[in-house]
Length: 271
Ligand SMILES: Nc1ncnc2c1ncn2[C@@H]1O[C@H](COP(=O)(O)OP(=O)(O)OP(=O)(O)O)[C@@H](O)[C@H]1O
Image (cartoon, rainbow, N blue to C red; front, side, top):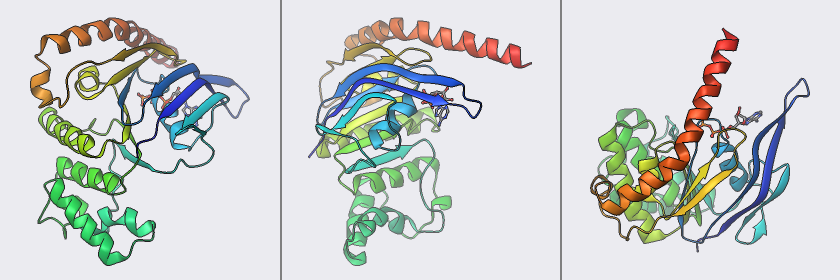
C-alpha cells in the first residue's frame, strides 16, 4: 500500500563547527498523495536532498513536521526504497545477489529471495545477466539492477535523488519509460528529485518548485497529462506538455539565475 507524505512548515538549519547557523530550507509545505508521483525541482543547493533525507528519516527538521502515512517520521521510515545518482550496488556481489539483498535482509530465505530476484531481473530486461558483476554492465544496465533492487521490496514510498542524472539522453529516456511502466504496476508514492524540468513534467503528477537557497516552496503544479504517459520522448512534443513546461520554467528560471549569480559571487570572493 502506498503511503502519503506530508511536510508541514519544515525548516532545517545546520550549525557549522564555528557556531554559524545556516538555513538550508525554510517553511516548506507540500504533500505527496498515496500513489502519487511527485517531482521536486530547484537550483543546486536549494535543499532538495535535505528534504528527501527527512522523508527517509535520515535527518530531522529543526522546526515543523514530516509525516508519512499520517505518522510523524521518527527514525528510519519503513517501507522506503531509494535510488540515487550513484549506484548503491555491491561490486563484489553478482547482479542476482544484489537484487536479492533486500528480501534477504528482511529474513526471506535465500532460495526464495533469489527466485524473486530472478523474476525482477526478467522484468527489467536483464534475464541472462544474473551471474554478472556490476562492473561488467553498462550504466543503463546498472540502473536497471538498481531499479529491480529497489522495487523487489515492494516499497510504499520510492525516494529518487537524480537517479538518471549520470546517463546519456537516450538511456535516460529509456529508463524513464521503464520506471513509469513499473510505477504504474506497483503504484508506490514517489518523491523524485531532479534538475531537469522536462524530466519532471514528463514523469510526475505534481511538480514542486523550490527557490534558491534557503529553499522555500515557489510553486506547486499539478500535471494533468493523461496516464499512461507513453514514451517520454514523444510526450515532450504535446502542446499541453509544452504549455506546462513553459509555465513552470517561468517560475524556476529566476531561481536558477539567482543561484547561478550567487555561486559566481562566491567563486569570485574565494578567488
Ligand atoms: N549535514 C549538513 N551540514 C551542513 N550543511 C549541510 C548539510 N547538508 C546539507 N547542507 C547544506 O544545505 C544546503 C542544501 O543542500 P542539499 O544537498 O539539500 O541541496 P540540493 O538542492 O540537493 O543540491 P544539489 O541539487 O546540488 O544536489 C547546501 O548549502 C548544503 O551545503
